[in-house]
Length: 520
Ligand SMILES: Cc1cc2nc3c(=O)[nH]c(=O)nc-3n(C[C@H](O)[C@H](O)[C@H](O)COP(=O)(O)OP(=O)(O)OC[C@H]3O[C@@H](n4cnc5c(N)ncnc54)[C@H](O)[C@@H]3O)c2cc1C
Image (cartoon, rainbow, N blue to C red; front, side):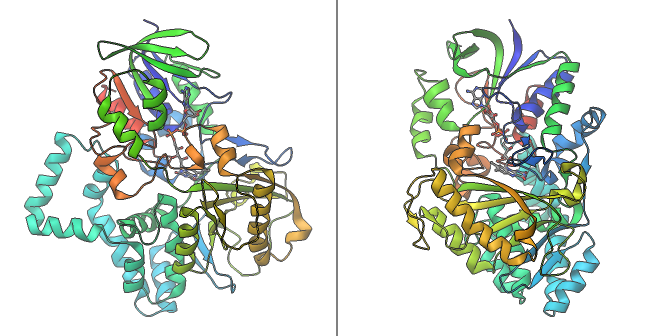
């Protein structure tokens, strides 16, 4: 047998699983169809030589605070992986130039919020305090193996502590939408605007069930742990993983497109690559979207329930990325933004809601919600001395374009002209806030949802999160209502990746959970 475990896909989940299993002495083989390892972890000189951009994922707070990061962090550090920080993880900048910046000092945040509206700071302390108090329970649900005795015991313990009605009430309040949370509890439109766009990064909208809880978790995490990026670029962690896996006898191959998972009597026996090569193995961990798993890799296998479920599985909004190389740091027209890792450009809840809704209806948003990262401030090694780069993420791009909410862009598919016209719209919003923008702009590079999918086929339609993250496709129901920890009727096959619990992000949770179940 060529390997104990074949891992399909070299994204964060595949790399975490491979590392943990290799550390336990298992023979692991990671197969990646693209020419570079890393999936959404990709750093390139995308604009100009000497300017290193994280083409896709950039912020490592989920990895840093999660169990995979805790266990593998020291090994990766040994292989050169390092975080870069700022004391100002996030902020919001409204069209009128008003802004609010979060620091990593809670007392300072409480004072700043209270100064905007009496009581808003105290409410903030209560919200993040509640997340801290619930952390062991909440984070086990958000990240752990849900179908397990551990979770059953945890729920039973909570029921004893809170009473059945108390636990039911806790679950009920956890389902609240962010709009309700923010409008009922915060008076300042700036505080509301600070948190509203963050729910988009969880694949939700301000009106989604459970988005209040996700908003509070993000507030807690950013305040406590910041918004770290990787020194030298997100791909540096991929290099560290590769060294760790190889050091422990594992191997990784690029240009290895798996086209079939081979089975005998409903048990995995190996995989077949697109060029016909067959590799025998004891188990397969497949970090792919459900459509590919059941319609391609398991084509012909008798799995009627999964095949029906895959037709119901929904992907979320598309994502658009825009990168700038700048001749000098931006001079923000509003003070206090120079050292902020991630700044949202939005007017507030209604604006966030409008752009998300437009994107969900297939419209190019009239005023998209923009997240601006300033990696050079955290990691000056990303560009030549005195220069700067910007990382813009637009979590509200339609997967399929039916129209333009502003009635101006005529394109109905993500071709080059539509991508650049949409990038012009974003640039107009950005440049409105930066005094020296025209003088410092050297180059830009835009990636449409279609471009993202072309680089990583798991990003179906440019959906960055491996599937819609509404509650019916989350927790024990991800990817399917009948899913059980990524396992099913094919013995030896584990489904991991963003499309499975605990969902998207750089936490690497599904790879971690799968490796632990396999004895790592
Ligand atoms: C633009 C963008 C920005 C993001 N920003 C952040 C961020 O800042 N912070 C954060 O926490 N999260 C972020 N996310 C989300 C996060 O990056 C993803 O949820 C996560 O990286 C997905 O990891 P994964 O393990 O599911 O695999 P992926 O990273 O999706 O990788 C899967 C790999 O499998 C390969 N593959 C697929 N099929 C096959 C096959 N048949 N054979 C061989 N190989 C195959 C693909 O080529 C790909 O390389 C972002 C996502 C995107 C798209």
